[in-house]
Image (tube, rainbow, N blue to C red):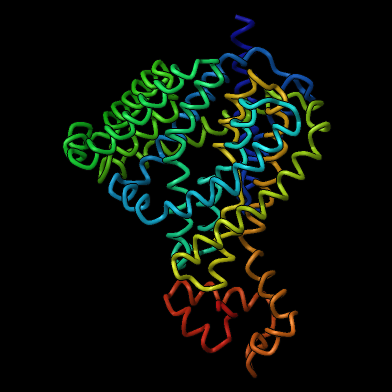
Length: 430
């Protein structure tokens, strides 16, 4: 009885603290992820107030959090959208992988952590945070901007790549042979291909079978199906997260919308538990020794992500301001980086503290780069003799930087950016 009361008190205190932290983050217009990680560090071993009784429950809740994160991410996309994005955005996806996975892999090898850790850390630095980026774009009012489909296209390719990367990483971490790893990869590719085929050809029938006018029945069926498929995927070494993602892709239409509305509160709760659990498993004393590598890696990968977004937007024919905004928006790392690090800590425990510090840095820096990369680039261009005259404001135009940014965003959202570019009042895109 005493253990149960201690469990309830600790869980209640943790969840209440998460609610207050999330509310505070919302008030200041910031992502709550760094606050959740800091709370985990404070409550974990070596923290200010270590918790013990709720570890097993928290671990299970964290696993459910990852599954729900990936399920709702899959619900955002239809199979046809994924196929279209693959056809049009794959060159940008290749550039994204090369520029952003290489620093992580190189850092792990330089630190002497070995090839398996290099594959894991490459994933940590490669994948942007879809959740943080979507929130930032909404907060900045950029969902209607011309560069937004490019940003989403890069994120979709990254999410699809996880369906191949996570099973491969899981096989490497399990110490499987080349044959075993190849088999796991073939199973993963076959599963992804089969799900995409079924979703394209028979998605309506699946959605109709799952559909229900009763919200309670819809919640139970979708959640049960997701956990069931995730468990089977885990047994096949494909990764529970990928299984959940594929279930989300297979559902479409009103079912996907209804499931999204019902599951979003659960996702937010268990995702918060997941980030706290990762912090709980990291000793704060392990972070200072890796803070310099994490900071250096963050600086390098901020530049590589900006270059990725700039290249992807340039391929889509978007002019200069939109290219810089796309690059700055892609900087944030979050849930996937922590998921990958959580898988890898068994092989290389130092990945956990490094990934925690790295994500903390970039989840804070990401919203700032999304807001200020394009104005900073424009200011630097105006400071050069070759562009100073062309970039100077027209007579009567507002000269402040804030008004210039607002003008650019407003013209993008209404589809009149080209006219604004020609007038020179909203800032140069060419």
